[in-house]
Length: 497
Image 1 (tube, rainbow, N blue to C red):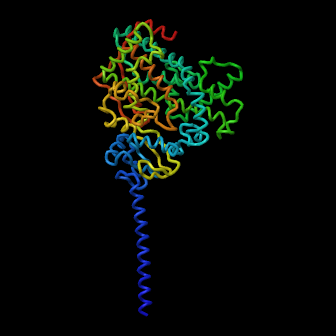
Image 2 (image 1 turned 90 degrees about the horizontal axis):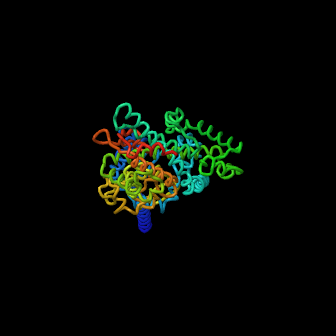
Image 3 (image 1 turned 180 degrees about the vertical axis):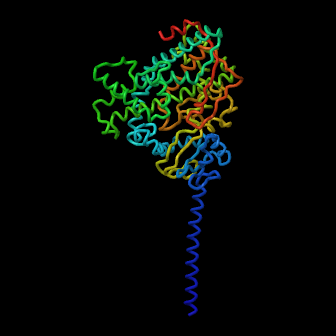
């Protein structure tokens, strides 16, 4: 009896020990997994998470996330309602996301807004990763935004910039005749917006607008509400189809994107390899180019001028460089840009301080992955805080200061291709902006023409650019500039000949 009791006691002890060991292992494993999760800022609320800390009229998201990085480190998770987002503020971690985990983060988050406003994800910039995105990206990069196509469209950029210069000079002459003043005050943002609209619409559809044109005002007004543009694109597309049916063709150098796409898709069934019909593909892609190019380019130009007006030494150096390499007896050409290294540095520095988006457009993980040693589950959104990345004091000396010369000395090897992960104004990896070459050529030539053509001054002591919450943080900032011609008047009148 005692033996049986002893055996039973031993068995119970062994069983309890076994259970305790298993429970401990499970607890240790769970605890270890929790340690591998990225840190999370305090203040999350049920249902909305951290949204109340980030969103709002008075909130500047990239600065809020930057402050969170100071507390949590260069990688952390925020809760955005039912979604969670991985926020990265470090170059090495960004590199890991866009190299080792590039395929994992190759898709965009789905949303009802994108589905309804983006032709059910036919806009390839917002489309999820897959066959359609790969097909359209390849077509756009090879046929639409290739280096050859960008060079062919040089005449459009030059024509629109010089037409704009001519209109400014004519306004200056009228102002001088009526007031006797040698100075003209203009709202430079509106000016950049108008001629950039013509560059984009001529590039996309062969259309241009005259000053005061009601349709141009309408297109500008609804460009940020691009659902309303559907009717406009349908009409433009129908005009192109009728042109081709009648045999009326543009010359080779003037072929716009719609014509290129129609040519590529003729004789093939869009449904066969993309899931969308040709009309939807053309409208969606044209809309991507219009909305993607309009705001970002004129906002960057406005930012560049505001920075130069607040830094007259840099403005003087840029104009002296133009005088030395181009002179004042002829207008600057796109071929001159290679020699204008300080001007190129100005654009790079502007895009460091004011990239098209201070927070990169969101990616989403299509599978579980590990980033910086942390477990990142499938469905996590990735946001790179470019504002924090571009102002890292370990990479950039005096990071908050406008110093174009840094790109001629310590940072001279940095480019726009997304391979140097402390400078990503156009993104990186599979989702890098496809229009980099087109954008940079437009920025270089426009700024060079403005600085060569006009003396520029600010009406008050300091030009202040408001930092908003949209993709471009200069949108609500008009930038009033006082200008006068630097060249002989005949140069402006003959600019478009």
